[in-house]
Structures are given as C-alpha cells and as structure tokens.
Image (tube, rainbow, N blue to C red; front, side):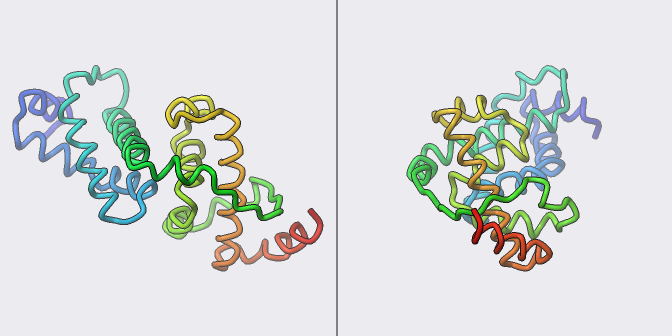
Amino acid sequence: MTEEAMLKGCVKNQATAQQELYYRYSPGMLSVCYRYAKSREDAEDMLQEGFIKVFGQIRQFQNKGALEGWIRRIIVNTCINNLKKNRKFAESLDLIHASGVHIREESIPSIVQAKQVIECIRMLPIGYRTVLNLYAIEGYSHREIATMLDIEESTSRSQYTRAKNMLEEILIKKHILPQYADKLEVAAVNP
C-alpha cells in the first residue's frame, strides 16, 4: 500500500490502512518511547496512547514533511505528557547527582553500540533522561524543552550537562568506554 493510499484510508477510519500505518511505524516509535519509559510495559502504553492520538489527528497531517517525523512529534509529546501527568519528571528534577567530573562532550565516540547506549540512557534519573533525549536525540532547543516541560531554560541546560556527565560515567563503568577511565579518574581528583 502506498503512503498516499494509507493516509487516505486512515482519514476514512479504514482498519486495514490504520493497521498498515501502525505496522510500518510502530517499531521505530516503540524505540522512541523506550528511551523515555522506565519499563517496556510503560513504553508500550505510551506507544498505544501515541497512536490513538495519531489516528485522531491524521486529518491534520498536510504532507508538508515526512509522515514519520509528524508521527514522531506526536509520540514524543505523548511521552512527555505521560511523564508530566504521572509527576515522575517533576519529582526527579530536584535530584542532584554531583559527581565533580567534567568531561568533554566529544569524548563519547559515535562508534559505541546504540543498544548499549540506550540501555545506559535508561539508567539515568528520569529528569536527566528526558532532557537528554529531547536535546541530544530529538533536536529540541533548551528554550523549547523549557516550554514543553514547564521548567526554566537554565534548568534544561543544567539537566543536560548533568545527564551527559552521568551517562559518560555509566558508559565507562560498564566498560563501554574503557579507554576514558583514566581521564575520569584524573578529572575526579583534579576538578
């Protein structure tokens, strides 16, 4: 089924078109949800809620960009709203995991396995994880993140910096980045 036919069918609430859209895009969107969720079950719930919104808003898609990008924005917003609704995000913003470690952003090589990195990102406190996902992966600005999460722009920046540092520590401790272990120890001793 072509994308155009699938979209027309979804607008008409045709089950086969909706099923096609879901099967085509749900695997990628589940991985988006998984980055924000605490468990696979939470991610699946976010995915289902997101696709309900996609089907409810499908008439608003104007073919001015990629359908996948449009769906992704709805899924990300669903994840954020879910976190805010459950107050998990607001409660975790106060957490300060002071490490005293200052690590350069470029020290995380792009060759690290994506699955390992995602698992390590999921180990971050939810506030850190959310800002890291929105800024580094989804590409939102700190101003946009602040608006989305009802926080200050400076809070978004500090959460991102702390998330980056904590993520690097986790990657090193899990021996995903063993070559940087000596730099971590030096930075911790000489802040």
